[in-house]
Length: 258
Ligand SMILES: [Cu+2]
Image (tube, rainbow, N blue to C red; front, side, top):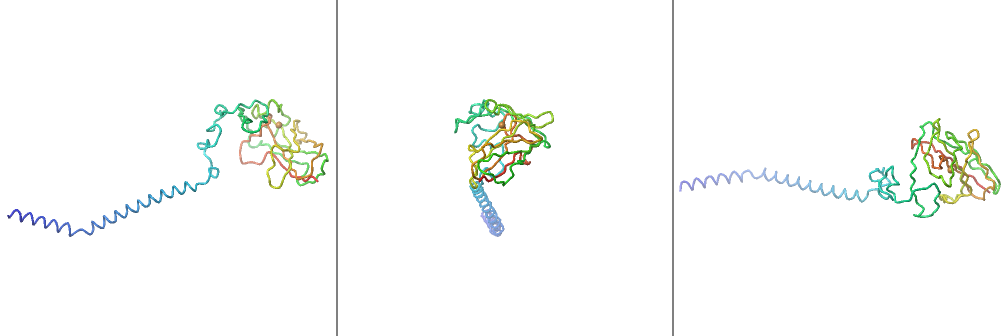
């Protein structure tokens, strides 16, 4: 009986100890639970935010495109210097393929070739006619271009050797190439159809005193016209320059033919 009383006393003491200090423990549990709830909410919010960001992400073109994701929407997969090995397109053969549509696509194995130094970048200006000049329809006129930093007079057979070899420099470090003049009719702000031109001529000869000229012997039809140079390397490829941020290698002017 004495033993039972002692047990009872012990139990009673324990009960008092437990129930006498319930408040701090409950507060701790409460605050822990609140913290957990807040964490869960934060996780939910972060997930939702990520989803929203994904949905609202601008198209790839709006941000700088990394080479590792650049193989999206290509015919041949990731970029490589040996592009034509993995491209299913037939190899360019030196002729100018004029087949419209998918059958006219080819892959050029020509490398970019020799690139000049930054002080030797090609630059052109059309000196005749003048920008904004008015010319009579059907009246012959001359287009003259002043070209800096180009060894002119280098022009291979455009029917058999088009894009057939890479850009080359002469011993002075200048690109060996030639120029072209193309004239198109403009309709308001619409980009002119690249397949349509009123006049086109390759300027095969070496420049005289740095100036290349061509006669538009038949003149032009009435309208707004754009006259542009298109500088090319020996095998007619657009020029490859050492830096992206530079002045244009070509010039364009607009004239009115009445
Ligand atoms: Cu050419």
